[in-house]
Figure 1 (tube, rainbow, N blue to C red):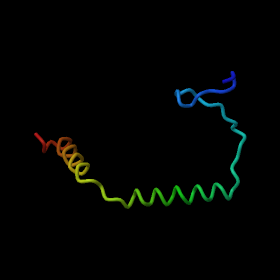
Figure 2 (cartoon, helix red, strand yellow):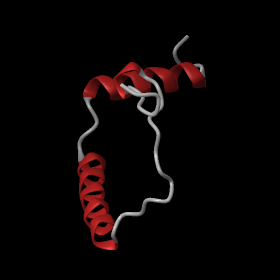
Figure 3 (cartoon, rainbow, N blue to C red):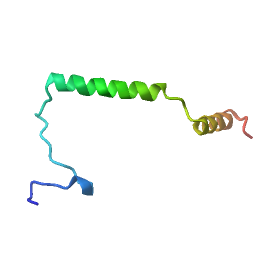
Length: 66
């Protein structure tokens, strides 16, 4: 490994070129895939355990859990 290379696997920053831009078509494809993934996440049901924890937190904050 030379001085210009850094190991990302060790948590060190990797050099990058901020002047690099993706082609608009590639940006559109990435955007489409990210939106589809986000839509799937938003539509997924909330697990019962998380709903229970949220209800307990709300009860504690409103004083009903005492």
